Every structure is written in C-alpha cells, then in structure tokens.
Length: 110
Image 1 (tube, rainbow, N blue to C red):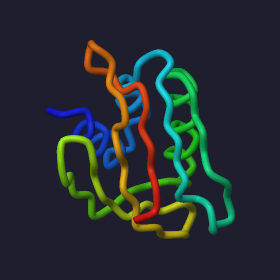
Image 2: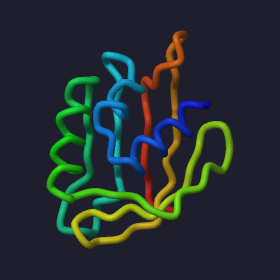
Image 3: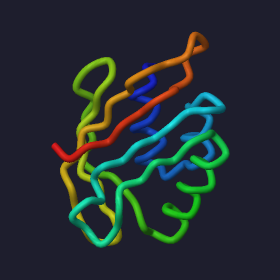
Image 4: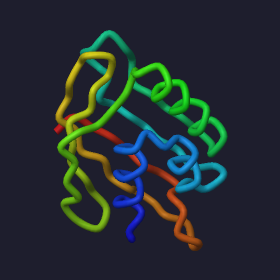
C-alpha cells in the first residue's frame, strides 16, 4: 500500500496513532485548507506533534474527511470538514524517506 493510501485510510478512520506512524520523526504536514474558514493554516512538524494534533482534532470532532479518492501514487482528493466548514481538498505526499515514511505532505484546496 502506498503512503497516500495509508494516509487516507488513517484519516477516514480517525486513527491519530496510525497517522503519526506514517511520518518520519521529523515529518511535516502543511494544511492550507483552513484559510477562509474560522481557522488558520496548519504547519505540524514531527511525528509526536502530528499524533497530538490529530488526537485533539479527532477526539473533539474538529476534523474529518469523506468522499476520498486516491488519484495517483502521491495524491488523493477528499472533502475535509473543519468543525462544519467543508473544503474540497487534495493531499500530496511531497517527499518520502528511504524507509518509506512521509517526510512532507501538503493539503490544499482543490
């Protein structure tokens, strides 16, 4: 299974531990989708921070995805919900380490 497929699966299942395990210890998620909503863009750096960030988002119902479709080896499209604000998004795995862990992933409005 490709990194982007695992990312989508973890996001759909709201599995913050599984999501964090997809990333290198210094992995980064940059999410530009919240711009225009009541929130700012997110820059989350490091496996532990990714775990804590998404634990908070998932546990308190502040983030979920639906209608996900993997479109190629590095990208997936989905609708992301930020506390009631819905954005059509595209996630891109920008860089993967030699051991297959994500080093950099971006999420942008589509």
